[in-house]
Length: 254
Ligand code: ZN
Ligand code: FE
Image (tube, rainbow, N blue to C red):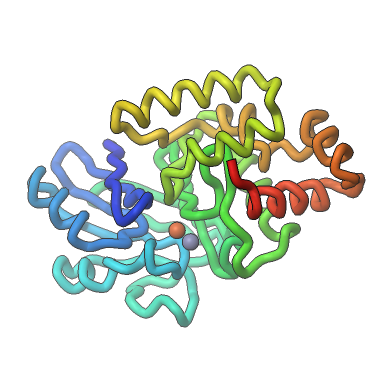
């Protein structure tokens, strides 16, 4: 199976998976034209669409793709998504025959109330829940909910490749550096990302193991984050530490 990030809108990625016969699925097509161009250029055939959450930068092209290609569209139960052919929820399986792929659906609320992720083929397609070196904003969920969702993702094998919905890694790295300036793995990752971006390449996918070593939002139990919180007078539990990180990131300006 081949994985291609299609840059779309300002900083979104539409993830495209295809097999050797050119049968493709896309995840979170915020812009149908981007997908159509990719399909045309490579003579790929669209077989399905997966959606993680209702925001328009993730679903904006789904109805047009469904109509043009007659493909199934999977996504969470949410009145704000009206183009689904298949509603899926926590523990469900999405099985496609061409390309041959099976995904398990994980409920990962926090960014939005009904956000889901798809786990399969060694990947996690996690929308706006987990980013490289960061996590999604809490538009509809609580810190406890988002931390639960990140814990679920962090429990996947370390080799799992994280396919997030946005190219935010460089900006996230500036905040991560404020939290952990002395983490050498983080500094190495930031240099790698700077090189990739200067080269016009995506900083994603990234392995979960790499994120666990560098992403402050997956590191609320480390001494570094506990100390960072203590310096700000936050001495509560891990939810309090996560909430403090998220709140600081919300107002962070490099
Ligand atoms: Zn979103
Ligand atoms: Fe988004």
